[in-house]
Length: 603
Image 1: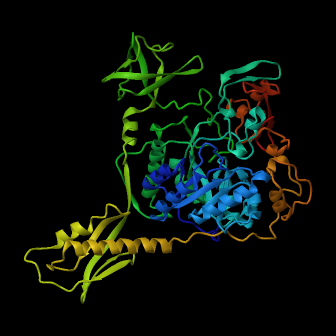
Image 2: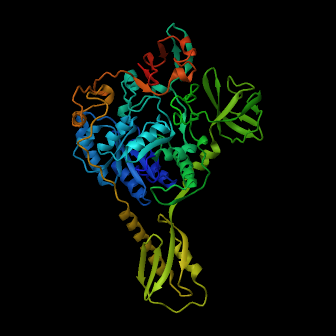
Image 3: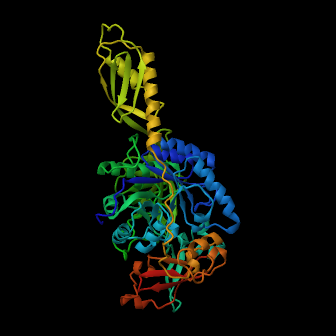
């Protein structure tokens, strides 16, 4: 990283399906959360009222944590006024920034709220990243596909914080460049209505009509897990570490946020919010929903082993191999610690078959529901656990973590005033003339009263008591403690300055030509105005959602040929003549391979 490039404090950014899950994420260590508004978020099923978002903001800001709202779909002309009003309301309730895709928002009459460029903006190059920075975007969300080297190049070209995904589901296409749902069923991912065409089973047919693969989930990827790669990502220039999952439940958010928070605390990096977390459980991301894990293309743009062809479901970790079966009794070759109610699965005839553990008899006997084991289960079959009853019960508890800001306090006297101050500089004082000294030590009693901080975001780490044997009534200490916590909250509110939108630079020039194809996703006249004012003088084609015809249904770094060992640049690749076609979606999907750029497209 260039010495001229600023380094930012690290932000752990968590998903929130609703305000309750957002608060939960903050409690378990998130520095910021992102949540959908009532409309125009890229997960249409995860909308929230402005009132609920206001409640989340109030809670998060106690810890200096931030709330970002997704308004990251394309906006039709008839919706611009509606979005304008929505943004005004979000700003007034304290939202820290908006994550947006549509550049038309820059021409709306809105407050100076900070804007983050969504991953839907498809910012793959340093030049494009710099352009969005110059438009006034104060944080840039990079594609999941980028390598460390590519991240470093963007970091060197920009000065705003960079946001990168570290965990969760992977889109097979570059975000913003997937029109499969629109093509196959009239639903648009760029409008928050992805139909997950990539998770369907397909037959792969070559140019001679041969079936090369049958009933495989050929476009379905493993889930992202970069827990061990955080030092490398931070070193490359990522400062906002994003967990995917605005449709995930509370248990998933508790576990994943805790795992990443714990890792960052071990690393000792400076964070963007305050407080420490006490958890009632040990996080383990392998015990939450996952399709198997990958680091994707972080280290190698031609990496393989990133796809989950057998199933798009959560299969879980291996728990053992079947040794014998008698009726509904299954013996395992290797002992495994299971629990009554665990969900297990195995692969049979290219299908995932699941069943419940009715009773577990240690060390290795499973009694399943029904009179017989599931069809297809036989000795030698590998079993996996995708529903962990013990862990689920732990995470279902109402309180699994408490987040507080530890206080280092000094209690002292100055004339007729009692003073308590924190190491941060906040202080409170009340008039209370010195009384007679008590006959017994008072420090422990005073500490017990001062430490009663349960209904506040604070906890007592250390108290230096300089009052000796002086007697101070509990009511006086309670008042002093309350005034201190109010002063601390006021100080936090004053110190947490909401970032405002950076100015748009008139001299910024769109770096990718003077005309725009449908893939530029221009869906309204205001978006067109923005691009015209920044060097686009030629044709601007409409976004596919507005009637344009994209050159490809999907564009991706993932290559099916490479994944299956049939790269066109190898001799083995020539064994599969083109065109290759996927059969299984509502319409056949033809594959095109751009070997010069190492891209695959779905036509």
